Length: 334
Image 1: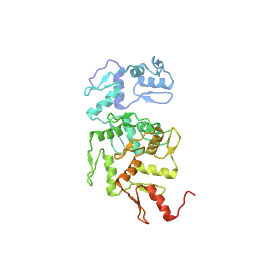
Image 2: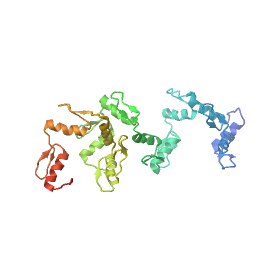
Image 3: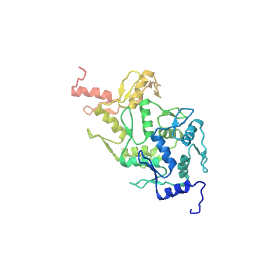
Image 4: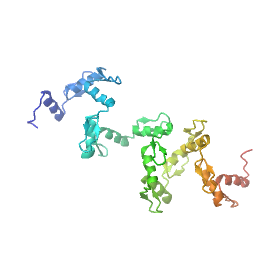
């Protein structure tokens, strides 16, 4: 290293500063220091709003020529930095350096809490939010917060109804790619996760974990209002709306609001006339799956709802409730 030669006098000085941590160039405005003069000059232009280099496509102003050249690659699509291992190309040299760590396994950024190593600084910043609990990204519709911007973007599709990921087999659309991947396993028959108790197979590990609670009886999610416990967090969130009266899903046709998205989807079929659930015996169709299940009991003779007073049984829960009023004397519609 001592015998290395340089074409410019400033380079060995700059390299010396990098090794010993010295930052001899300081801004008189904000006291920011730098190991080289050119970085300080770029910083001062930003502070003084001196943006002399303007993009001729979108009029964006940059503080120096090199930043403008890099910016223009957004418009030209130029990707001059190519990975020698896999051939992937990048617009910025810094992006290539970060990418190459995938192949080398280099992870120079370490969490000071749990020692987890990350390949780039931005991933470390995101990771640290696990420890700090910081959730800087807020949904403007419902106020829900997220640690990652990508999670917020995915969540916002619940409100907008945007479902950009479509199954190429059945054309069913999803608002995130991971749900589409899980759905596609239905068509491929890929059920990799098997229940050790009943041998039921599932397309992903999370579904198997939730299913196992049927056997164990574990209900880890408890309502802080009424102490009712649930096996799934999503069911608890929906249940809480019983107490809060929240109905976040609204029909764009008649403005009727619902506490569950599935109820809104079923309701929309009233307006569209869609009846996707068809009886295989008499071919009668229904707009809700539960209605089809109840209807099928006409053919099977199944009556799973029994009165605990007189033991008379019924094919649906609504009929049982009406019958029980005979015993209780309740007259709600007077």
